[in-house]
Length: 504
Ligand code: GAP
Image 1 (cartoon, helix red, strand yellow):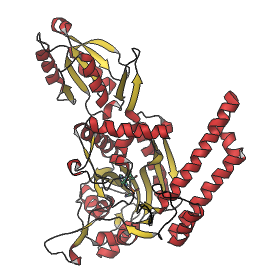
Image 2 (cartoon, helix red, strand yellow):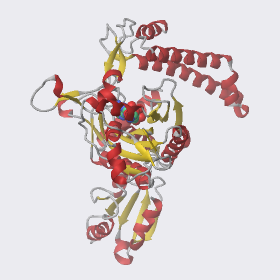
Image 3 (cartoon, protein in one colour):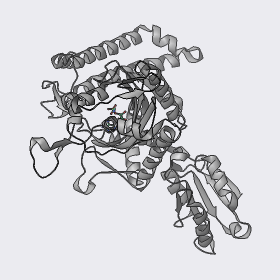
Image 4 (tube, protein in one colour):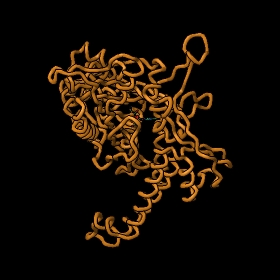
C-alpha cells in the first residue's frame, strides 16, 4: 500500500506539472475538493465525454440527449427525496476536531481486514508454488474464512443501522471495533448526525426561504422532469433513454483522494424508461453493456468488477456498482440502478401533472419504470490517469514517465517535430501539420533536442510523433514514432493520416 500511496502522490504531482489538473484557486491556497482541468486535462475529459456520448446516444437509436439547467425548482428536490434523505452520517473526533463519514470509517476498517486476506493469499501462493489454487484456498482456509465473516458481519450491521436510522448502533459498532481517528489516534468520538449534502443558494434579490434553491446533486432529475417533453417531441416509444452530461454538486464530508471525491464534479447519466415488470431484464442489459464500454478502452478486465448493493438507495429495487481498481483499491466508478417508478411518481404527486406514458401496443397509460446508468466523468479521468501513468527504465539506463492513455482518449494525438530549427524543416513540418490538424489534435514543437521532445510528448501521452528530417525534404517521407513501444517507422507523408486512423 505504501508503494501505491507513493505512486498516487507522484500521479497528482505529474497531473499538475504537466497541465492536466490544478487545485482550484491555488494562489489563494486552494479550495478543498475543487479542481481545475488544465490544457491537457480538458482534452482528456472532453474525449471521455465524447466517447461516452457516442456510445450511448449515437450508437443507440432509442437514446437521445438533453442539456437541462443546473438550477431547478426547489420542489424537485423535495419530491426526489434529496431534501429529507440525501444525507451522510457524520462523526467528529473530539481531539483532532476532524470530521469523518461514519460509514467510511467502518469501510476503511474492513479494507484493512481485506489487506490481511490478501497477505495470507500471497504467503500461501509462495508456499505452494505452481500447485496453488487461490479459489480453493480462500474458500477453505480457516483464518481467511474468519476474516471474511468478520467483514460480512460488520458491513451487515452497519447497513442495518443506517437503513433503520439507528445511528446509536453505528456509533456502538465504531466503538466495539476500536476504530481510532487516523489523525489523533484517539477514540473520543461525538454522536453520529445526519448531514445533508446539497448546497443551497438564493435566487432573485430577496434572501427569503421561499427563494432558496439548490445546486443539483445529480443530473438525473433534469431528465425526469423533462421526460414527457422529450418523449412527445422525439416521438420515442418505450423502451427509450435520455442521456445527459453535466455538473453536479455535493458538500462532501470526506473530501480527499484528489478528483475521486469532489464537491463540484461532472456526471454522465442515462435514464432508460421501460414497461413496468421488464426493468430487471433492462437492468441486466445495461449492466453488461456498461461493463463492455469500460473494457473497450483497452484497460485489463481484472481492473474492473461489479459490486452489488446490499443497502439500496431510497428509490432503487436493484443496484450495482462498476468498481475500478484505483491506486487506493477497488472503488465505485459507475452506478447502475433500477429506480422503479419512484421519481416519476413523486414528480406526478408534487407537481400535480401527469407523468404517464400511453403505450400504443398495450393500449394503456402507465408511469414507466427507469433503469439508470450514472458514471462520474472526473472519476473516469482519474481511472485513466492512474492506469496510464508508467515509469519505465530504458535500455540505456535512463527513465521515462509515459502516460499510456488509450489513443482514442489521448489529449493530443500527434506531435509534429522538425528535427532541427533550420534548413526548411520547420516550414515542411508546418505544412504537414496543416494537413492533419483538421482531423486530429496536433501539437507543434521545435524546441530542444529531439530526445527531450519525445519525453515531453510521452509525459502528456501523445501516441504518435512525426519527425521531419533532411530525408523528408528529398523524398516526402517522415519518421513515425509510437509512444508505447518507441518503435520508429519510415512512412510517406501521404500515408500519415491513414496509419494514425488505423492505430486509433
Ligand atoms: N443519479 C444517481 C447518482 O447520482 P451516485 O452513485 O450518487 O448516483 C453516480 O453517483 C456517480 O457519480 C458515481 O458512480 C461517481 O462516479 C460519481 N460521483 C458521485 N459523487 C462524486 C463526487 N463527490 N466526486 C466525484 N464523482 C462523484
